[in-house]
Image 1 (cartoon, helix red, strand yellow):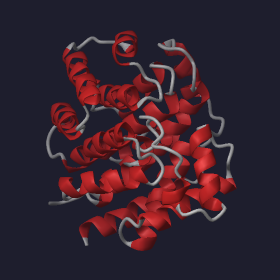
Image 2 (cartoon, helix red, strand yellow):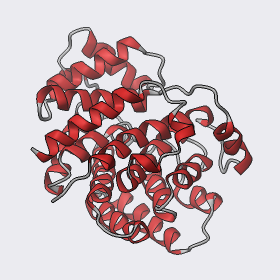
Image 3 (tube, rainbow, N blue to C red):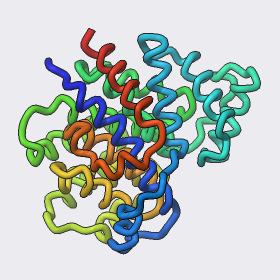
Length: 307
């Protein structure tokens, strides 16, 4: 199987770009007016990462450093990045967990309960989807293992599996972009392994089939909050509505409102995986910090995937 380096770059850079563009609207009720996002998109002011990008990059760094997934190294990497920027938007639970790990508590002992079915593992899963893209079974395994370090709730793990398979299917897909939508949605639905998430993915399929579905309908039926059964189907739906345009995917994802940075980051990762680095608007790329670092990590993940 041939894996395209430009599509690895597109996935990782797309995740960060989506995060940065969604961050200014996080928590806003949806659907957002089209002009609200258009005004931000026209601006030239620098954008900023949130915890979505910080943890995505930390996962990529750990994979590159270890040559594979090492939960202990990953936990330490997450904790180190949290300590550098604890105000990056972490949830209270995740921040407290990473503080305990940073203070020396082993990650398995740092957990206090399984948490909740949030999107904290799904939002950062792109690197494992890429490094294991040649083997969807391995994608599932690595997604589960990477999730368990901070988000062991079965629902959160299911969300990571679903998002990872969506990205891996997109980066592997050979054919017209429009035709990719069905393949990505179906592969993601099969990967869920969670009744609630499967039900929401079925609803996403119906929304995608209704060709003129807008942000109001998607927000009403799926939601776009931090619960994984809302945000993961919403992100996949945002991608599948117009999979041949990175800008349209991210615009739609942000306009859903609520957890805008995470939904746009996940949707951007899928769109970037399918369309490649060149599909991301240059004007957006120019506003995102540390993008050369992200591009270099994508290249190193590609080298690991094809070795």
